[in-house]
Length: 133
Image (tube, rainbow, N blue to C red):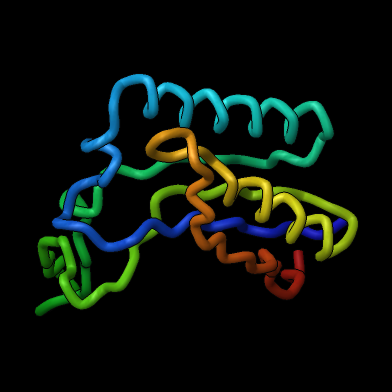
């Protein structure tokens, strides 16, 4: 079995979610889709974890500053074309299954119920070398 991270990317906005412009019904349909998708992954024994993320306007970039103290920069980041909206970590037997799941996640409904077809980045989760005990 292999683990993959499926990362949902949303288009750049003003630093806030574009979903804030959706009707309550459109937003509820989107969330219901995500709940059904997560339930299917759980029932198939493929879901390791999944989370939605706060709006990019709340994001911070942290680097080590002087003496290792955190140097924090506010978002949003206008140079970014898109931002990470959420992710799933799945455990599957072959890469093609991860691609299939990513394609399904991409069909989450948006305004008017139309599939968003958001890009879902798929990357294998790697493990480090074994440590001597």
